[in-house]
Length: 314
Ligand code: NAP
Image (cartoon, rainbow, N blue to C red; front, side):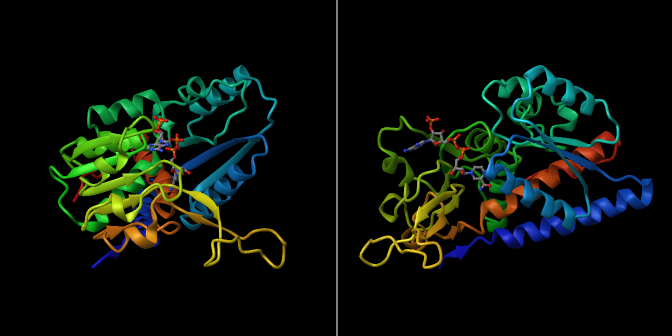
């Protein structure tokens, strides 16, 4: 039998936990966190992500400030703004929405954010802590944390399991690898596949756990997986809806082909073989923004010298 991992349900549970933690700090110390989210230029996809952030932070009643900067901003001006925010005690976390304009060195600017306010867990210091398995408090890339939360939901012992991670980006594949390698979060036996992997199916067929974060629809099909595999699909792809003859379905209102969001895994066929699988949408993506709030609360408690619950698998 296949269990669909419900990201919305996981997100709801984490939101409830965060509300309780925040209420405790508010009652005992009268303090509340503040997230500052920086957006540069006018990218429609970034605006959608920011709207989603606003919605979740509003629901959690966490103070959220959006700082909109022009596309023409110079690197040193942005650096100065961030340094100022690092020094403002009322700001708990700083989020820098991507993409940045081409004249700005992304890695340099991301590392201008103080690790104590790095709500996305993307500074060299916070990413480095994953190598050392320093997980309390955990402040790590949100998508990678969302994957761990989806795996936790299965309640399956991960120790030693053959785990294939397809895709090794700095914010998804690599942090997932480092976290799952640690004895606190998995002790799995990992294989990492990427663009130069010669025979992807040869690796995926050996997977007891398969995590896919590439950005290519139907990259993983049923023939590429074993019965009983746990599948976590991180990919987000917009594809055209087709009819039974494979022809695009036209939207009557717009006259344009209808589209939908899918993952990297062919859900229909792979879900027949998997023991657990995340859907897209409604899987990892539903948990990601909540993990931003989780990171913020961890930073908030650390800044106040409060204890943070150890982060471990079960
Ligand atoms: P990325 O930076 O473009 O990385 C993609 C990775 O896939 C790279 O490591 C690349 O390898 C590898 N790759 C590309 N083609 C491949 C192939 N044919 N076979 C095996 N590996 C291949 O992307 P990302 O930021 O990690 O995002 C990956 C996907 O996750 C995207 O669809 C993105 O939209 C989605 N995403 C979802 C969430 C969420 O909350 N659900 C959050 C972030 C991203 P090389 O580096 O060797 O080229």
